[in-house]
Image (cartoon, rainbow, N blue to C red):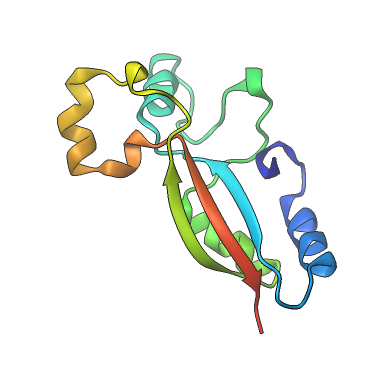
Length: 118
């Protein structure tokens, strides 16, 4: 839900504030490198990193930008997992070879596990 907020940094800082001392935060964000998102942006002649207006995303980060955002909130990334919330039927066969070379473009979201910086 961070991508829907005007100020995700405020939300991250609040998460950190209410987190137990040994607690962890799990956050998933859309993958800006997902091939369908890039293809749609190119076809609609939009900036690739802008999210689709119909889903009301105000923010978009790649893994490096999200790392910087998390650090600004006083958190650190413990683990990252690539998630695919679409079934295989949505994947075009022509892109199978490209996904094998650059696997990140085949995943719709990233799941981050965060903890406070000590």
